[in-house]
Image 1 (cartoon, rainbow, N blue to C red):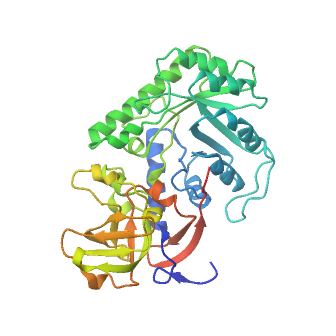
Image 2: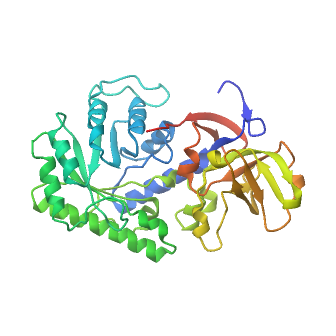
Image 3: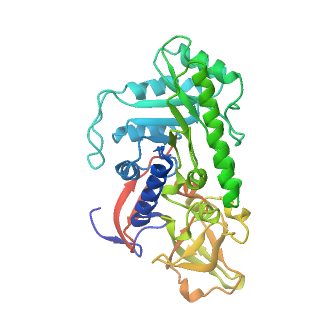
Length: 392
């Protein structure tokens, strides 16, 4: 940045990233993966930042997962080649995927990594059905494919014992161009768990289901070198990952109030917050109005489901990062946030033009409204600006 900037002068609303907390989160999950004996492939759908990805890779992560092709192109531009596009395939995207995989080397932004290999990217795709499998086989390019299995989430994926698993694998390889590399699963139902035993049980179901699917593929003659599992809750609480080869947590990098509420991180581990300015007082309503609303904070209300943990649309704190107990964003419209508490607000602590920080319920959704991280080193000075990818 060309000049020193502080939270007292930064334009609001703004997305803040506390680098020491980020680094601690990255190190903790890397150590967890080593303990569990699997590779760590962080899912970048939360952070969406090449600077964050590079820090994770420097600390032992191997490759990344993404949720959009815009993310895949962005990370490829920044020198990251091993990419899992971890969303079920829409066959119309095969040309774009092949173009990314074949793309010749380009010079990424110098601050992130060395130049790309002329080979382009190793992009792995995912499917769970015969029509997409046949489209992959018929496509003129060579594709690397994982078959998605359902281990309880109920979103996408074949049952690990479904005979169609083998049919899909055979269909993918029918023309000899594309190859099945293994299986993946995502235990999204872990977000509904509220105690450590339940979380550990979901993690075990995720592990055992993926391992079963991989064993069936191997028995049918498919090498299946990749068995990919993971969410932040299951990666945090799994007792073992025998049979898996990699895990794909994502929100662990930033943390949020919901993850703290279910025990995937602590409140002090949350590395991201939103800076907002006070623009109005509603003393008769015991409310303060901010210039950060639904687009800056999101409308995610996931903490509402937590016993004694409802944080409204975000927890409010001061510029130094100290939480104001009981003070939350209780309502949002597009560009306005309404702050209140069950006890009388100290309006002197919220002068017009004053600033607060809001910790989010769901970091992925909150961060999605912003195109840059304003990076802090534990204080109130902004020490860097890191870009983020947006779009599809």
